[in-house]
View 1 (spheres, one colour):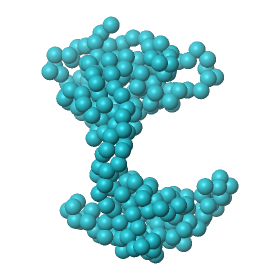
View 2 (view 1 turned 135 degrees about the horizontal axis):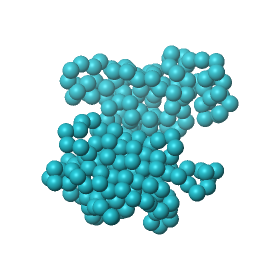
View 3 (view 1 turned 180 degrees about the vertical axis):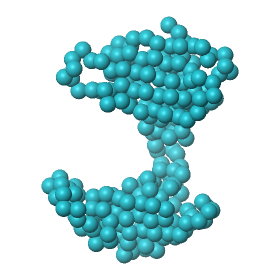
View 4 (view 1 turned 90 degrees about the vertical axis):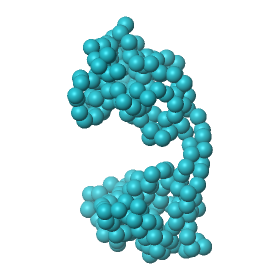
Length: 263
């Protein structure tokens, strides 16, 4: 299937404002990737443009809408099996005007080059609920933040002085490795991005404010055993537990989409 479109090149000028007033790249080129190409790359450029190599439409949708594949619903199989190269420029008429968000311009490109017709909806999806494990009691690894990093003056001072929290962690940040997290003045919801969960994390502890966190757990060659050890450590060291739940989350529903065609 990919071989049949290998010679197709799509290039053209996109108006500075896309459909429904959404910003767009000034010039964009989309073409199928060369056969045998390996490695997927996509990133915004400092000049406001965008480049992608050997990228699937699923990957482009992920960048445009900030959603993982399991929250992009519908669409044909080729969205995840065919690869494209994209080069897009943003050359505004007024160079002093702020550069629009790359995500919005990429959404316009997908609508104009791939005829994307999609809508954001709320649907119940699997999540992990983070809850208190011991009737409101926190364990020693979870302490109120030593520094008020919500205060810009405090944030600037601790970074200039190189201060550390009592647990040895970075103030106003997080340091993680295999089986360890040290954090200073973070919100509990950020844990979801550092403990390797397969679904979003929702903070349902009722705890507010910022916290210093010390968490360690044994890791080995078995991912299932590693996750079990992490869940045990959450309860013993932080006084928190993870429970499977569902919650309404944003999903992108693909109504229709087409391979890019020459114009």
